[in-house]
Amino acid sequence: MTVGSGRLIAAAGFIVLGGLASSHCTSKASTPQSDLKAIVSIKELMENIIDPIADNVFDAVGTDATEKGVVDIKPTTDDEWAKVRIGAVTLAEGSNLLKMMRPVAPPGDKNNSGGPNAPELSPEAIQAKIDGDRALWNKHADELRDEALRVIDIVKAKNVDALFEAGSRLDRVCENCHLEYWYPGDKAAVLEDEQKRATPGQKKK
Image 1: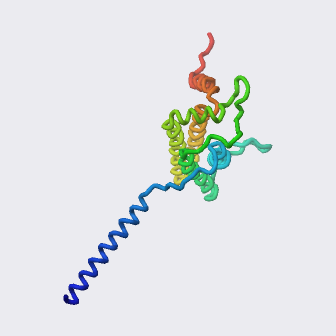
Image 2 (image 1 turned 45 degrees about the horizontal axis):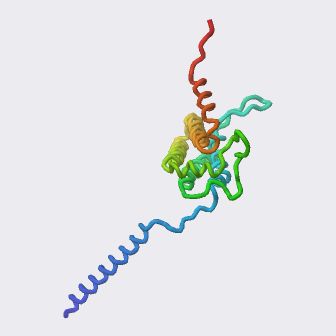
Image 3 (image 1 turned 60 degrees about the vertical axis):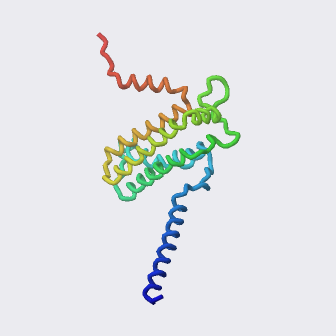
């Protein structure tokens, strides 16, 4: 065997080994993570992450009545816009956390679901609704994600008017989910109120 042919065989061996190693790494990388486990319930996720961080968006634009008059609230500095972006990014990623399998509430938590005409569903009832139509639950989570992504684009453009409108849409997305699972007893009244607001009042003769 010549020196040249030996080098070719060695090089071929390295290529084969490299291909096997690459295939093994790719196989590992493409394997879904099986060790992901929810730490808290949906209620705790909402109370500790989703709800507080949403205020970064909701509170970014508005008006405040003071002794000196009405003050417009809007982001003007890079830090203020960054705060809005933090809120939007966290909400977008938080929507994925909502889609993970997890209990509705911590053990022993019953919501405000006791007695006749209880204003809220029990965690068990909410869980039954989610399990009965997981696609609908995921749809609500995806709507939260989509609105959060729109806010991220608005932050890039630093469009205050668009941010105000986005806050209203985000609030509606949250309320729609709550009316579906948390306090569905209020759904009819809310829809009736929205219809009245959308219908122009008729003048009495």
